Length: 363
Ligand code: GLV
Ligand code: MG
Image (cartoon, rainbow, N blue to C red):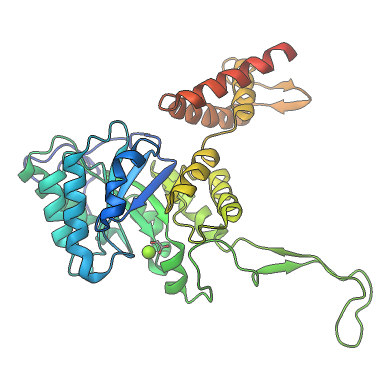
């Protein structure tokens, strides 16, 4: 076991000092692009300004014969463009693949100074993070990189879920964790054949209103309610992340046309504590932006509660609702997030101010 005193020492001579806190940078949508696809790569500069995070994907969805082209395409895109305040991430190939080592060797040497976060798929335990941690430190030292590249794990194996707490706390480099529902479903032997979202067969049914007939049917139709297949995993991931001061994300939603269900899935994750989701198509960028930015009316209300609570102790009644130390803490979560997002998004800043002013006359 490493001593707690050593936790913040660089893992290689000449590597940058680890961060003590994960910087909170807006990351409502992690927008995936395939750098081996020239048509998609050409759209990168235009898309970069519309997203919080741009991610060059090297893993699944890039065919084996395009892996090297994808890596080279990402290097070229990062060298060619200045992404301004938009973060640049990559998803490398899984650690048991023949490509992961070359992904890290090439990317850190060539574009390490521009790369904010490396997403590592199929993480099973702390040992996977330790491997990447040490390797990144060596490569950062070699390339003379002045700040540590952070690490993001995808939670997409049953073993990974069983070890999610140790993964979240495995290194000061850990930035966050995303749910990977597609691989996780396969790993768990779930009987779904889709990327995220619900399943019509996973439901609860209301009780029958009267007696059942001989066939077990009720006289009146019984309502059914589809349940969330991902509730347990997201809640567990959120707790692990919160306990270790890192950020949780919902991952991909594969049914691009079903924008309503995508929005529902994203919103459930947002309400449970996630800060963002992946966007696989431009249509999902707007959904993530809308869902992962707190509602202006909620922000205005939260500001009102904070003001009314003074030093944050005691209790007050506002519009018939009891507020105390715990509600003021919830309100601070909302306002802190809103302020961080508004600093990057002038339209949102305006909407927050307008909603706050609207509240004034009633006070
Ligand atoms: C993402 O990688 C997933 O498997 O859902
Ligand atoms: Mg996956």
